[in-house]
Picture 1 (cartoon, rainbow over the protein chains, first blue to last red):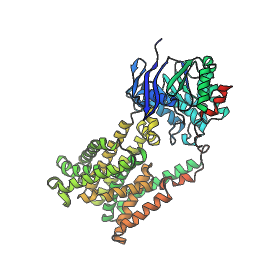
Picture 2: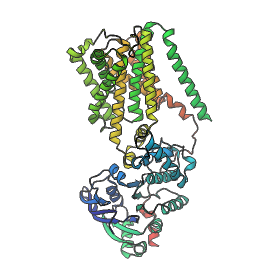
Picture 3: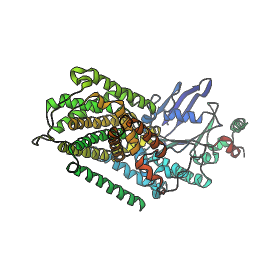
Picture 4: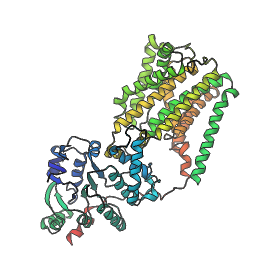
Length: 247
Length: 339
């Protein structure tokens, strides 16, 4: 089975610090893949490399059979790699609906291509059901800057889905959420369409094990272990890595 | 409910102002009508400044450059092609847009204060060229005796100040209406989104530099069209009409009116120009000092402009925004793995 996304020998250095040192990763269509590891392991850097905001000094990133290493974040988003940021990134002066419309526009194909406003109308039609699905229908007309943190997180997920992603990069989506909000988030992530592959970086390991099919553990910029959640949960190597990371 | 009242009140004030502007030529003398026409032209440049500064998030001190390009193109080229106002308007708008397009590689990649510096330099460069290219522009003496225009084919020439004022008013109202419509389209939505968070917009897959380039060229076209109106209103132009003080006053007017509001920018720029002209007679030589003090007071007291000041009095229609909590740290969740 070919990889939807693959990284080969990806390396990133910041001065003398090797943030990533030859990381290989393969994510298949529809797979739920998690990246874990102690602070400074290189998880967010790898997400940045895949999303296009950091260019690796060595190695390649291939998506859907094409080398996308030289493409920026916008071009990768148009190809179907969308990202949910550690801090919800929304447009604060735009309403929730407008936020979703903006996110949907690059991948919208209007029914009547040359009809004025056709793209926006199509995006608008897509926004309503997504806001419903995320439980944001009541605040659809409220500027995103007025929403609570948890609502902004839900809005960002709606925005990511509006872009019709094939791969969703989730960078600590549970950060700052209450227990109830985390439960709601888990439900939303579990309900994501199976056609969308997910790469999840998360510190809450209960969430990681509940949502992912495969887990890769990074330490000091290198792959320490990879396997199913059960294999990772019981791996003494991984336990040791976390113990060292905390110490 | 309160929003609806405010919206209606705003509409009523707008309608009153427009009605006042329409009847003005029958109420004021020739001189005042000429001053009003010139003020409207400058207010239109203010709209182009607001489009860049408030909507696209590119603060500018250089909109006098396409304004000058439009005015000189209209005076030098337009009058040779045709005496029809709309033709000259089109020539001026194209000239402004072309100049703006030429400066896109300098302006669009820059951000914040750097944009201010670059646009200021472009504006000063254009004024210098106008002052030195005597064979075409008349140098610092400028171009005088520019023939009056007829608004449209078959219509009479605009021979009086009142007629020229009405022509200016109609063109400004039409172009401001077009800008307001443009802001309601996809392009306007994306410009506002980019002003909020450019990185996020890029991450959604949008071509942000292309959008900013489009806004820069459109603002250039508007300023160029305003240049044509200046020629119609004054029938005389010189580099002094496009100097740094004009740029600074326009930015001041737009800040006072509220940078994100086209209507506010129009009124703010018009007020500042009117105050300058009024102070010129009342406090000769001290107008810049008073306007400077006004600017400082505005920035401190109404940082979002007069147009948005009432927003602070309006109760939020949703829960107040909450700051994002700090990101989670590893050690907070590690015990789960240890368990």
